[in-house]
Amino acid sequence: MSVSLLFSISKKLLLARWKQTLIAAIGVTFSITMFVTLLGFMNGLNSLLDGLILNRTPHIKLYNDIKSSEKQAIYFSDKYKNNTQFIHSIKPTNAKKELKDYFAIIDYLKTDKRVLGYTPKVNTQVFFNVGTIDLVGVINGIEPESENKLFKFQEYLVKGNYLDLKNVPNSIVLGKVLADKMMVNQGDLVQITTSQGERVLLKVVGFFQTGLADIDKTQCYASVITTQKIMGKGSSFITDLFIRLNNIEDAPSMAKEFALKFNCDAEDIQTANAQFETGSDIRNLISYAVGITLLIVAGFGIYNILNMMIYEKMDSIAILKASGFSGNDVKKIFISIALTIGIFGGFFGLLFGFSLSAIIDNIPFNTAALPTVTTFPVDYNPKYYIIASLFSVFTTYFAGYFPAKKAGKIDPVVIIRGK
Image (cartoon, rainbow, N blue to C red; front, side, top):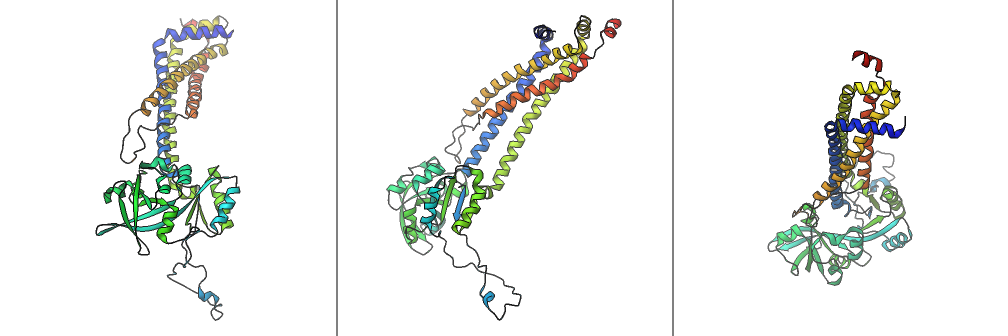
């Protein structure tokens, strides 16, 4: 039979039971709407949480770790070389914390096309002198421009400009929680005591807030030059080198390569944030599982409605087959009914899903822990809409296939004889 005739018959059957058809379509629409909205919101939330950590984490970190000596003095003694030694309470060696041949490392990274950028760090522990109380803190010496370019430093500043660290001598940016404890304002002077016992005055040029309280109550930022001066070190003294790559997947292999090449320790982002990534993967899995479950439930609804339609339309099916329609023609009619429900329900589901996501995206979300976030986060990745579209078509197809197969096997003689 011609496609247009089969489609016309499908249309008549759909409109004949329009209430059941509408309920089935609403079920698909609701499922697709919630699938798209749920995935967009959950993955937007994941991206926000990932950004809190990953935006501040280098793909590769080069540093010198504090280790105990692998070879003890007794190992070099001929007297005990044939004996088995048991050594306890081995103390770390007096190794230098700074990176060796820092400038040579920089020259190499400039020529490596896999490297997107890098920024040096000088970290030191200090005590903030607040009256008779000393608060423990960590000063991170940074190059403000490269730090902002690679790690979006300005986005975490709730007050001040990152360039002030470069332009204002002996300046510091305090964590918001620490600043509130010390009750200092922008432009005030704070006194610190270094690990060597030196006391230094620094000018507060801004406050930053990451949303992670443990960081915001201890971490502070100054320029590399200021930090080197505080520690009494020269311009070549760098404790860490943060590297960003063009492809984050290359981080584990390149970390091993750089560790051997530069004779230092190297940590890749996958190793540093393994537990965090596991949490993100689990949240994504839950989102997909809930969304797909909704679509499957909608598919069962379509299956039941088509089953009821077949029982109610036994006479019509018998007449069609007696008029010359084959079993495959009848099967195509009912599959086209199911696909029509799936396509129209899916289309409106995508439309309502996008609209609901846009509404959520504009709902105010104000929290002191995340001052840079003003609305609920939503991810509009096209793949969610593509997955929802494909799944709605496949679900409705299989929901209609089995009732259609049953309709195609109906014997018109049995139905007519029964009448």
